[in-house]
Image (cartoon, rainbow, N blue to C red; front, side):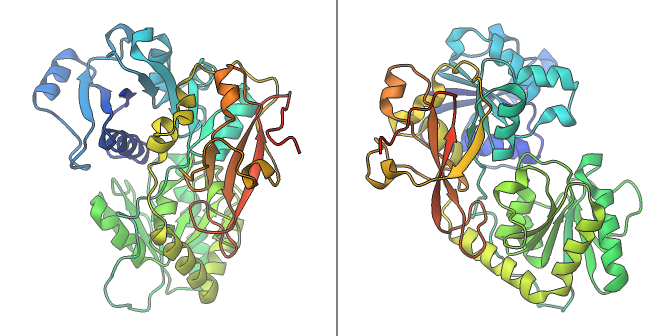
Length: 437
C-alpha cells in the first residue's frame, strides 16, 4: 500500500522518532511509504530533495523523504492512506482530495495544552479523521472532550536500543537521572526542587541531567550529557538507578519507559500517559500531578529503600528485555489480517456516549475461540482485538471492542509480561454483546 505521513520536521525528538520508526517498519513490510516534510520555501525544498536530505540520527531509514514548500492539499501525493501526525497537519489531511487515500490522525499528545492556539488545536480533534492515539489517557480525552473514538496503540520500547547495558565498575554512588527541557510543563523546576529536598537528607545522592541542549542557567546537576547519541542512551539509563519524570502532562513518556527497560526504577508525576506503564508501588513510585512534596516523598522512598529500588529495576528491565518488539503501528494499522484494515474505513459518526474503559470482564467469546481473528498484542498494554466481521461488512458501528490488559502479577507494567485479563470497552449506547451467553 501507498502510505503518506505528514511529519512537521525531522529534528530529533521523541514524537518524530516515533513517526519515523512507524514509517520505517511499514516500509520494511513492503509498503510504499513517504514522509512529506515542510521546508518553508520552494528553493529550500528543492535543494533538500536534490541533496536527499534525511535525518542523520536515524541511519538506514527505509521510508522515502519528500521535502515540500508547504502541505497544500492539492499537491499531496496519491496514496491509499494519508496520516496527520501533529495538529498543524490535521487540516491539510482533512482537506486533501480522495486520491490521497483514507485519512488518519496519529495523536501523540493533547497538544491543546501547550502547542498553538487551544481553540484551533481542539478544532482538529473534531475533524472527520480516523484517530490513533498512543495511550489510554489520550483515548479518554478524545472520547470525553470531543465525543470521538480512537484506537489505542501504545508505542513500544525498542529492545534493540534500550536494554540493561554494561557500565563502568560500581562506585557505590546513587544516581538520579532526569531529562532537561526548557518547556515549563516538562517540570524541571519541580524535579530539581524534589531532588534538593532528598539531597538535604542524603547528601551523597547525585543528580544527572541529559537533553538535546545544556541548561541556559546554572542548575544543580552533578553531571550533564548534552545531545548524547542514540546508541549511548542505554548506557546512561543503565548507569542511573533511578529515573525521575516530573512532567506535568505526557502523551506517553517514552524516556521513562526507556529508562525502565534499562533497569532504572521510575519516580514520576501522574502525567496521564504514564498510566499505561506506571503502577504506583508496583512498577513505579507515582505522585499526584504537580504535587512537588509528594514527588519528593516518592523519590525519597526509592533512595532510602534499596530493596524496593532494585526490585523495580530488575523486574521491569528483565521483562522489557525479554519482550519482543512488536510491529506496533505496522501491525495495528496495516497488518496482514484483513480485519485490521478497519482503521482505514471511513470514520464512524460521533458517538452519543463517551468512551470509558469498562469493568474487567470475562469474555467467553474469546474463551471459546468464537472470535473470527486471533487477538494479538500490538502495543503491550492495550491492544485492539478485531471486531466481529459482520459489523464491518454491514457497515454498522461495532458497539464494543475487546482489548487485553497486561496486568502483571509482580509488577504489571504496560509492556511487561504478566497475567492477561480481558477488558470490555463500550463504543456506543446500543450494546450488542458478542457473547450471547
